[in-house]
Structure formats: C-alpha cells, structure tokens
Length: 329
Ligand code: NDP
Image 1 (cartoon, rainbow, N blue to C red):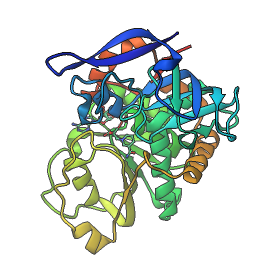
Image 2: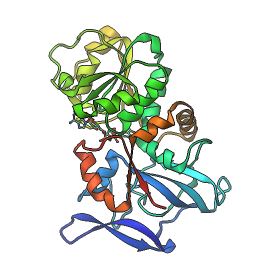
Image 3: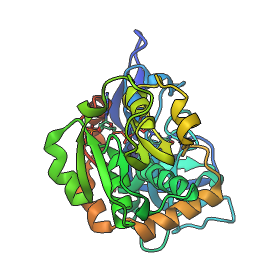
Image 4: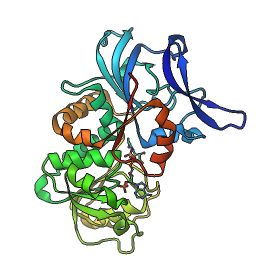
C-alpha cells in the first residue's frame, strides 16, 4: 500500500481530492515503477487540481502531479535498474497519465531522465517543470546570441516558479536582471535571487499604445504573456529575443508586428512538455552546473500531499512565491 492524493468526480461532475491508500495493482501500465520521493506544484498542477481538471484531466479517478523525482523500484527497460535516481517532467504525465502526487508512479521509460550528478531528488523538484522551462528559455536566448555584455534581461512573473529560477540562473551567468512583479513585498526575495532592478507590474500592464518604445531590454524570459508580452516586444533592443514561456496574465497577444519588422525582434516559443530526450539531458546538465543551490534553497516552500488542494487554488491566483516542494517519503 502507498499514499496518494486521488482526484475523483462526484455526481454533479465536480472533481475533488482525497488522501487515500492505493496498491501497486491500481497503478497504470508502464515499464518503470518509481518510488516517488518528491513532487512539486506548477501552474498546470493548479489547473489539474481544480474542480474541472482545468481541461487537462480527461478521466477520473486521477493522480495529478506533472513532475516527480525518486528511485526506480522495478524496471522492464534495460536503461533503468532498481536503485537508479530519476526525474520526470512533461509528457502530459499528471494530466492524461497518472503523475507524482503518490508515493509510487508507473511510467514509460522514454519519459524519464537520469538525475544528473550533484542534484538530489529534492533539489530536482525545487527545479521541476518551472525551473526546467526557465533553463530552456535561457538556453534559447543564448542560442540566439544573448550575452551579458548586451544589457539588461527582463524576467516577467518574476516571483513565481519560472520567474524565480530564471532570475537566479541569469544572475549567476553574469546578466543584469530586471524583475517584473505585481507583489512589491517580494522585492527583497528577488534581490537576493540576483535581480538588480525591480519593475512594478503596473508599469507594463497597459495595452500597447505606441508599437515602439525606447530600446530597453537585451533579452526577456516571459512567464506572463498577454498585454505584458505585447508591451515588452516594443521595448526590446534591436535584434533581441523574447522567450515566451507562459500565460499567467493571458493567452492573447494584443501586439503589432512593428517590433519584428523595424527592430528584428525575435519571439521564441518555449515548450517543455514534448522536449526531446537529448535536449532534456542538456538542460538538466546545465541546471546542475549553473543554478546556485543556495538560491534554489531560498525558493523552496515545503509541503505535503494534504496541502496541495489549497496550494493549487493559490497558484492559480498568482499567490505562490518560488517553488513548492512536496515530500512524499
Ligand atoms: P507561478 O504562478 O508560480 O508564476 C506566475 C507568476 O506570474 C506569478 O507569480 C506572478 O508573478 C505573475 N502573474 C500572475 N498573474 C498575473 C497577471 N494577471 N498579470 C501579470 N502577472 C501575473 O506559475 P509558474 O511559474 O509555474 O508558471 C508560469 C507560467 O508559465 C504559467 O502560465 C505556466 O502555465 C507556464 N509554463 C509553461 C511551460 C512551457 O512548457 N511552456 C512550462 C512551465 C510553465 P509576480 O507575483 O512576481 O507578479
């Protein structure tokens, strides 16, 4: 028997979470069974935990949790053996497949990544999809020529999960980081992570009035989307790139094409879910190398399975700071 947070639907069609015991035979088919040590909470987990499943969960009962890290218990795949430490993000695990909010998970071997040397399972979940995606965004900006000498890099939704890791990574890599936040009380936290300038959310909240504003940012990691992304496009330096990661502020893009045409600005799409294996390995390797662990520690909010329903609602309101780490041991 093992503990799990099970999502079930009632007759009215609303889903709710219940802490319960499951057996190995309850787990879905898969090649590798993992003893989950830690999981985490991302924006998407908030959607999956909501009464409707956020349009992501299709069948109930369901175990949510889009990320987990732990130790292989059993494997039918030669790439993994009992005792191997692994991490999983993406592949729609926790959405259409059972995920990490249980002490055991059974998944396809292709979805796993060996934990890089020097990273614990707890640290891997402090990173999670949010931090992994922040790394992918920074790598995309680098691939498009970004270097610290070019000027300030903007991070939107900075006090959230993606934003916090992006700020810490960029600052560690020598960039001057400007952090956009709607929560002035997070200023000390963001400066400790390495932000050298705090930009109030209100400064970028208004919709585009002039398609081009002064050239301010050498790069941007954007977790917010919507009107804020549209404004940021008009403030990018000539030839600079924005890595579009999220939609915490909306899925629309009320922008003009002028920044692309007159300033050669690039809008780079970042997807973490279907990322091929080699790129995953590279990103996890970079995380182990370039993310300062004492800064990662400062982002962590410890939690248990029982805390998740409330935290899920909170993250959808933009009310979670940094990274929630769920202890399943
Ligand atoms: P968080 O909730 O932790 O962070 C989002 C942050 O955005 C908040 O903390 C807040 O930052 C800011 N924010 C929230 N609401 C608004 C708003 N209405 N207007 C402006 N800013 C707002 O979520 P995550 O960091 O986990 O995820 C961020 C986004 O990235 C989500 O949309 C998520 O779906 C997406 N994502 C995409 C991935 C991909 O593969 N492309 C992978 C992972 C995440 P502050 O308080 O500092 O203003």
